[in-house]
Amino acid sequence: MKKAAFYILSLSLSAAIPDRVHDLLGKMTVEEKVAQLQSQWTLPSLGAATPSVFEKDHLNEALAQKMLGSGLGTFAFLDEFMGMSPGGPREGAERRNLLQNWVLKNTRLGIPIMFHGEALHGAATKGGTQFPQAVGLGSTWDPDLLREMFTTVAQEVRASGNPLFLAPVLDLAEIRDMGAWRRCTPRRGSGTWPSGRQAPT
Image 1 (spheres, rainbow, N blue to C red):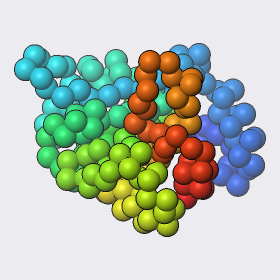
Image 2: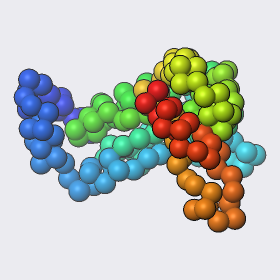
Image 3: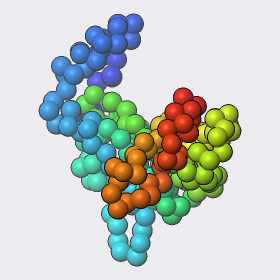
Image 4: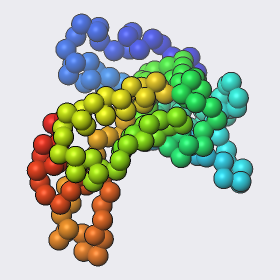
């Protein structure tokens, strides 16, 4: 399906954002709205045949139509999270470009996909630097050090083609709330000070 250009379907880019959003939502079908709430992902090959939308340097058209035909909210590369992706950051960026270009050219409204990565304590991608877990970071009592660390993490994640990553995580669970589960790795420590000081960082 060939789409009309996004800027033709919506108001001028000079219009106020709330007006443009209202205009776009009015043009979307229920299926397109639901698709924006969904996420898809790649899975690492663990011995069994895992269907993938990627076929070397192009997409499997039938799977792409099924997965992306109404658009898509987010996409994550779980094989990258597990260090089992084919290639490094360049290949990751190329795979994202394949998906994004397909959506822009083949969906009715051409709403871009938002790609996200994982970076709880380092870029979860092949070659990414891994730093201590959150409880170790909290024990540094040093917000400036964390700012420097997550600047490095952001650069590494961005190099792989992810404009968004799930970090830093501030799990504010208290031990009394956790019952038998006494350990929560994204937590900065038992007290409120580390999370309170490190959150703005």
